[in-house]
Structure formats: C-alpha cells, structure tokens
Length: 450
Image 1: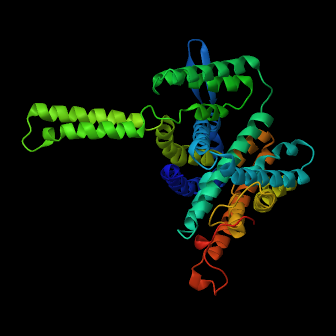
Image 2 (image 1 turned 90 degrees about the vertical axis):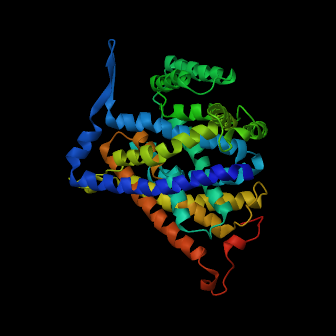
Image 3 (image 1 turned 120 degrees about the vertical axis):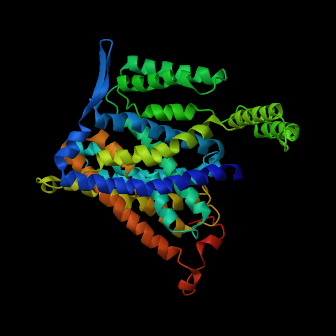
C-alpha cells in the first residue's frame, strides 16, 4: 500500500486545488450568463473546425469542450481507475468491496428518488443525473477539514468517487447512446487493436499512438456511442508496468555514478565533463524508463485536466440563465429529484449499503473509520457537479429541463458542500472542544460494523 501513497497524495492535492478553480469557474459562468446572456450563448455556439480535401468537421465551441476536451478528462478517469485496480484500493476484492458497495448504494438510492418524482415522460431520462460524485469538489472539501481527518477516510472518499466514475461511465455507455452503427464500432475496435499492438511490441508512447487514439474517438462518435468514452478505453489500456524495474535503474545508476565521480571533480578536462554530461543524460533516460507509462501520463495530463479542462467545462455548462421567465418554467419534479437525490439520497445510500455489507461480513471497515466518518463520506458524495452536468446534457434536449437540471445540480452540490463542511468541522473539532463526548476519529480503532 505504501507504494501507492505518493501518487494518491499528489492526485488528491491537485484535485483539491482544482476544486477551488472549478467552483470559481461555475460562479463566473452563472454570473456571465445572467449579466450578458447573449454574449455567453453566442460564444459557445461559435462554429470551429477543420476544412480541407473536400471534407469538413465543423462544430460549435460547446461541442469541442464537451465532446473533445472531456475525452481527456475521461482519459484521466480511466488512468486513475486502472491505477486503483493495479495498486490501490481496488486491487483486491477485499480492498475493493467497501468503496464499491458504498458507491453502488450511493448511486441506487438517488436514482430511485429521482425516478419516484419522474417515472414517465422525457424527464425519466434524467434518472442517472444524481448518481455521480465530483472528485475535485469532494476532495477539496474534505481537505478543508484539515489534518485531523484520518487518511483512511480521505482514501475511502477518493476510491468511492472513482467507483462512482466507473458506474457513471457504464451508465453513459449503456443508456446514452443513439443506437450502434457497426461501421463506427469496427473503426473504434480497429483503433484500440492498433493501440494494443503498439503497446505489446514495446513501442514507447509517441506520435505513432495518435492515429489509434483518433480512430477510437471517431469510431465511437460514428457508432453513436458518446466519444468521450474513448478516453476511458485508452486509459485502461495504458501500461501500468515500467519498461525498466526500479531495482535495475538504481543498480545501473549507482554503477554509472561511481564511474563518473572522477569526471566531475574540480579541474576536470573538457572531455571528462562531456562524458559526465553524457552519463547524466543516460540516467535521465533510464529514470524515464523506470516510471510506468500510466504514472507518466497521469502526471502530465492531471494539471491540464484539473486546472484547464474541468474549469472550461464548468464555464461552458454552469451558466444557467435565470431571467426571461426561466424560473417560472423550471420543472419542479426534475429539480426535486436531482436535489433530494444528491443531498439526501447519497448519504442514505452510502450509509445503508455500508451497514448492510459490514453486517453480512462482505466488507470490513478501514482502520480509523466508523459510522460517523462514513456519514461524512456520504454527504460529500452528494457533490455531483462535473459528471452530473455531463449526464444531464446527454439526457435532455428540452432547454427547460437542461436549465432545471443545471440549477438543481448547482444547488444540490452547494448544499452538500455546506453540510459536509459543517458536519466535518463538528466531527473533527479539537478534543478540548468535545467536552468528553468522544475521542478524535484519528485515534479510532478499527470496527467490524457500522
């Protein structure tokens, strides 16, 4: 488990910082859409694309953000899912059981609540909207609670959010396609096959990989399956094993450094300095080979996704126009289904699933986590901004339903944020402030039930 700690810590730190940027972008979008609605809408409907050789691919800017750039977001999700499956909390059935079961409960109950309000008509397509958890927002909020939060609880929240991503991806793939065009699907499969072949023959990542990536995206788009899922497909195929083992790199580095000691002493000749520089370059290359392609790619694209793509997505999609009678036209049942699903359904689903699974002996609570910690995870799981908005855009074509969904997601996520902060600060207040009620959760012993 120690091997996975550093990547997890870096992932959570970046996601935490990105949560603040994401929140700022959402506020800007909401203000912009209401202060200058025409310019906001005009920008995202600007046509952009590629034209040449008798072909053209021209789409609105909104499409390039939601369907193209978000593929990179889902690529990062795919990488994180695979890393968790290889070396993290999803690497063994026993480790994976609790967050997966909790995530399933946290998806099922909100969906049932939404369906109870919208059991027929076009609004029913939005049943999956309140099932998702936004990793960046949720991790950002739990980070605000400080170092008194047990590390196990933070990892549980992160892993539950990743499991939620898996569920959301499955939902998008199964329920939000427009009928499969087999020609496009064959193109996507051919692209994935070409990617696998390059990987299997040991071809290092580079420009040769771009064509298979584009093939998968275009194939899924042509097949009627949302093309952003190409990111997940490729992410799960990225090698999680380094070309050179860390032990081999360390042995080689030590040998080369011993040989270079005389070359870097004071007064070394120009030839010796040149040889020392060559040694350093070789070590740099070998260090690169000792990192897994998965780790390198995740390290490279996470800042781009967290500080670029996700805020841009929020800017393009969180702008709900509240004037012109929009508030009067909002669909109350859709709003209640989403809002109550996120704020109430998520914590109930997570708590009930955890309680049932631990009572049945299917899962075991992490050390330092008890029912109160699980309740906090459930509340924060109700922050469902990015993927919830994404599913809402796939669910509806009616502008009223889209506006209702966006506003409800914003309000539900905001309430979950405030509730999570308030409950977390109460739960993790200093021992001197507890008046002897309970010891801090940091020192809590493992519990087999909830």
